[in-house]
Every structure is written in C-alpha cells, then in structure tokens.
Amino acid sequence: MADREAGTPSGQDNWLRPRAVRLLWVVFAIALALTIVPDFFIEHYDKFGVDGTFGFAAWFGFASCVGLVAVAFLLGRLLKRRDTYYDD
Image (cartoon, rainbow, N blue to C red; front, top):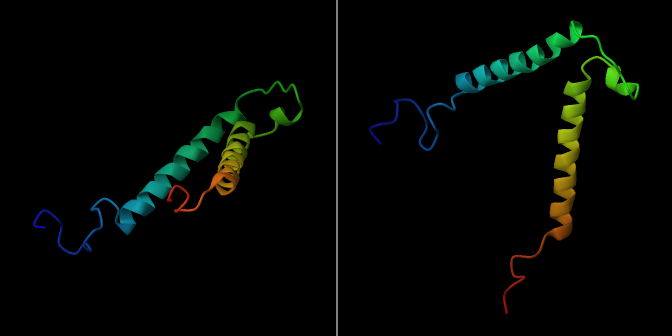
C-alpha cells in the first residue's frame, strides 16, 4: 500500500484521476476534429450521392459502430441463457 500516492482512494488507479480523464477527453476530441480537417481541402468524387457529403467517413464510421454495438446487444439478448442452463 505504500506505493500508492497519498490522497487517492483505495482501489483507484493513479492515472484515472478526474484531471487525467478530462485530459483524455480533450485529446480524443482534438484527434477526432483533426480527422475532419482534411475534408475541407479534398475534392470529393461521389458515386452514390451521400458519399460526397462533408465528413462522410467520420459520420458513417460512427453510425456503423453504433449499428454494430446495437446488433451485438440484440444478439446477446437473443442468445442469452440462464446461469443454471448447464446444471442438472
């Protein structure tokens, strides 16, 4: 217990302080914003109409991720078994 910093609650990792979490949110938000910046300077050649919109890769990637999480959640609900499924 001597290796923990003074003032941190027991069981909490030292790097997961509110200040570190806030810094991570800021760094991730800046990184995500920087992925859209090149969209201002690139000429888009759309094949399907919607793929030529501003920030298409960013919002399509986010929507795909949300869709995959939703499908995984529904599959988990569908395939879920009781804790006593394999008991005699």
